[in-house]
Length: 420
Image 1 (cartoon, helix red, strand yellow):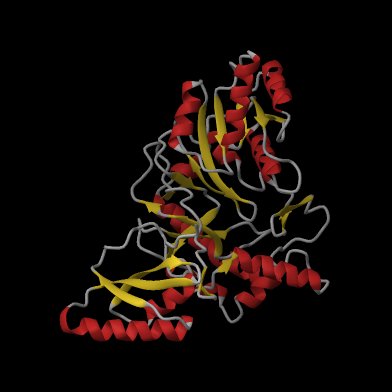
Image 2 (cartoon, rainbow, N blue to C red; image 1 turned 180 degrees about the vertical axis):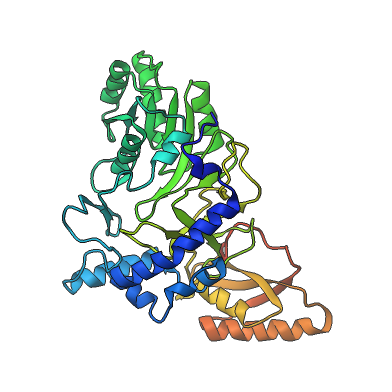
């Protein structure tokens, strides 16, 4: 199943990078002009200078909690419900508005395959002329519409099953004979189990595209044993499709309509390839032009090409949450504060703050990767400890470790306390 949706997926990496970087200055300028939130966030930035990854990395990261705060403040002041991030207004160019927890409101533009989901659906094996049973929600959140618009762009018919009503879902599948399922993996498992309980075979359901939840190999294999080849994709209500799985099952391929960066949590600083960090997305969608949008999710870039011939970057997929803010002795400690400590010391390469003990009787230890050894260690530890107290207002032990010693899991703050 190595069929590609279009030639964009197999173009030379240098060609793709040149196209993305050529489009970037215009997108930044468009956001500055048409999305008031970016008029402020990118004030003083000359869009024509943003022609490289290095230049992009100097722009501020707008994190999801900031988007929520700006939306709430704007609505309270009688302004835009989108907080100034949307380049569209209500009307024919915005057929729908959706709501995610927060609430965060997301616009849906009028362009075909607005969320760019067709590419993921095609990679899961669906083809034009097939019927898809879509079990993502059609109310409040955009997931149902995201998948339906992508299926339509691919030339498929959709049964809008939505969520719940498991017996009716089984009946509809048995009678309509869809080529496959789209929805959360857990609900597909429930449907398969209910069909077995009812004694109703579902021979047509042989493929699936799942998202919205973790999809461990054990569940994937469980479905394969029951005749369903399921593939996953990673998407958000803000950005649409970010990455999708292929038949190679070696990470997720980045979508052609976004630029991906992996940054150290709490900062905007890109990390080396392979290191786990926060996924930051720059969308080329002119209707909702999110520039350096921090998803709050952890991932990492995989090296090398995909065996299916697709040439875009690959990521490991969702690896947890990047916002590791915790409270220590009544004070909030943020990943950005740890990053600020590290930046004060050229000898400090990377750090991980470990919080131990019990709530209200806890202690901190900052483990710092450094090449400093010998007589300079004691002085460096004292200076780092002083910086921690200055930045966090808390005392912390400092532990110097060798480069490469810290676990590559994206954690800047590890809460190892007992809550029992």
